[in-house]
Amino acid sequence: MFGKKNKHLNYTSGPRDLIVSKEPKSPISEQYRTIRTNITYSSVDTPIKSVLFTSATPSAGKSTTAANVAIAYAQSGKRTLLLDADLRRPTTHYTFELNNQRGLSNAIVNDMPLESIIRETDIENLDVVTSGPVPPNPSELIASNKMAQFFKTVTMQYDMVIVDSPPILAVTDGQLLSKVVDGTILVTNVESNNRDSLTHAKDLLEKANANLIGVVMNNKKLKNSKDSYYYYYGNEK
Ligand SMILES: Nc1ncnc2c1ncn2[C@@H]1O[C@H](COP(=O)(O)OP(=O)(O)O)[C@@H](O)[C@H]1O
Ligand SMILES: [Mg+2]
Image 1 (cartoon, helix red, strand yellow):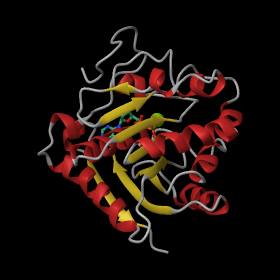
Image 2 (tube, rainbow, N blue to C red; image 1 turned 90 degrees about the vertical axis):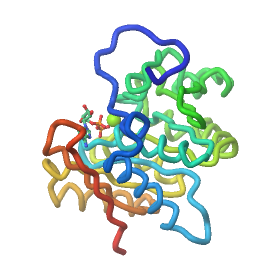
Image 3 (cartoon, rainbow, N blue to C red; image 1 turned 135 degrees about the horizontal axis):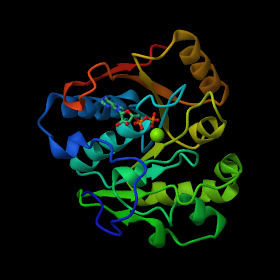
Image 4 (tube, protein in one colour; image 1 turned 135 degrees about the vertical axis):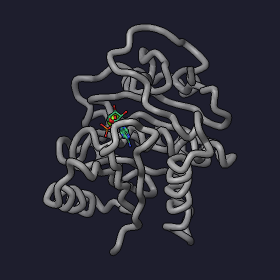
């Protein structure tokens, strides 16, 4: 529905709710735009041009938030790239109904040219790079010089790069990625989170010298996404 090219195949996981695209006037979409605004205002002197979404534990809503915030940026006229750097449980290809045979992992391992892995979407100004096939050694790929080079190249080509990633308490990928982006946002599910794991995640990000710009409180209490709310609080340093 949202991907232009290579639609198809078997989905083991359904599309995420791209409410900002489907219902731009809804209060929930407004919340995502508020996140966008808060990112913009979190840094006055050096504009934030890349943002990592991570979480302490799985299923916090990182991928849902990253995709919707990416759409909010695209809608504001910024050339936006959504990069799926969750090389463990990637979902961006499901969300945008794209196949995942080409993506970040192949780009890094096989030196594939950027043009062959960047996918346009039906949403104006929004391109996507899916994870590519899940590699056996995700952290090694994420930490590689080739990844750094790849990231440098895409940030030069886009006004905003939104990066999806695995949970920070599980693996080091999020910490590694937090070093290359301008800002990091922790997403948490207010229903299932706990203070210790959030504090631990914050500590790990600080150790990595991440620029933690905020926390998204994702409330999944009302299962129907229409009735779910997102809240954003700036980081109180
Ligand atoms: N605010 C929300 N309202 C309703 N469903 C949500 C919300 N946030 C996430 N979900 C659902 O919860 C599941 C996990 O969300 P996801 O964004 O994939 O989390 P993560 O990337 O952190 O693992 C998905 O099925 C997603 O559609
Ligand atoms: Mg995810």
